[in-house]
Image 1 (tube, one colour):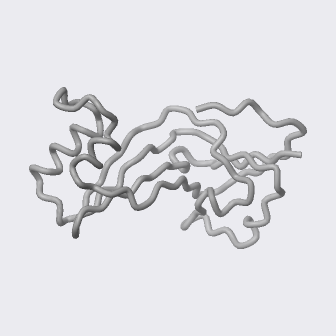
Image 2 (cartoon, helix red, strand yellow; image 1 turned 45 degrees about the horizontal axis):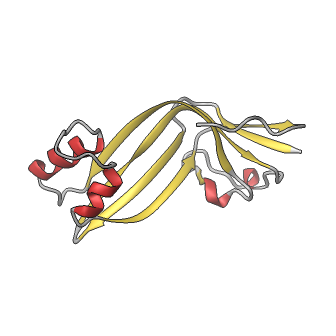
Length: 139
């Protein structure tokens, strides 16, 4: 038996990376317009789940992001990142700078940023469906 956990609100499944350098921080990732989480373990977290806070996917036993649709990349900076640096990092993240050919993760690392976390979260009201077979997983 498999369980598909589906957020009922658009944009309630996110993947977030956090990078730090000295006293500066970047939060970036993808907000999925639609998506779901799949697990083969009956979800027990729902008893204490707060839709306003959500839950990290790694805290759902057996949970993996299964299907996602229409991802939108987003990036945010701490107040300690200067505007000029924000502009450069934003260009790198959205790959609009021809100056760099590597992925934004590699370029951030080359510029001295350290990835301190990479996690996926789901929040808002959820629907849990029981499935007899695992659906095809893809991104």
